[in-house]
Image (cartoon, rainbow over all chains, first blue to last red; front, side, top):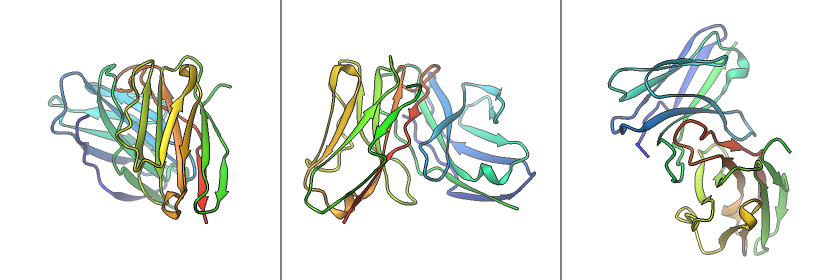
Amino acid sequence: LAKTTQPISMDSYEGQEVNITCSHNNIATNDYITWYQQFPSQGPRFIIQGYKTKVTNEVASLFIPADRKSSTLSLPRVSLSDTAVYYCLVGVLNRDDKIIFGKGTRLHILP
Amino acid sequence: GAGVSQSPSNKVTEKGKDVELRCDPISGHTALYWYRQSLGQGLEFLIYFQGNSAPDKSGLPSDRFSAERTGGSVSTLTIQRTQQEDSAVYLCASSLVGAGGPRGELFFGEGSRLTVL
């Protein structure tokens, strides 16, 4: 798996847009970028996955530049319930391999 | 059930005792993962099962830890002679294929919280 680097923590306010950037300079051609969200006392859950350009779903958007060496998870109009740890993972398409999580970004939403 | 099921949800044990944690993955999921998460920390990979292949045990912290997966479905993580540093939440996840690409989403259980006194 490609090594990833993301901020340890971020603070924001309710109603704001939050962008969390993940660096993955060694991303391989077949790698996909996946983000997970973990609320306190729960297991992580899948948020979004992408390969290039932009992906949007009901929860978030994922922006991936042309060189794919970074990606940005965008959470529109956050609320207190978006307080969680967000993990960025980069992995090979359908490869049989263990999945290692980094330390993630601890997002704290303030009222 | 529809999701990954783990039991027990909470386990308190005394130092030196053995414990078994169970994971029932989503039906049909070929990949199964065990992780450990200490308070305020990230997920620590423990072991990975994929189909009939030999498991990847590279994350097990000591020989007191072992895991098996019977019939390609239910998995049991066993910790022998528990120590206080084993106290953590043990999370199990399953996926349809190796989780690097489409259809590879990891589905996590709620975890088993282990407290060693």
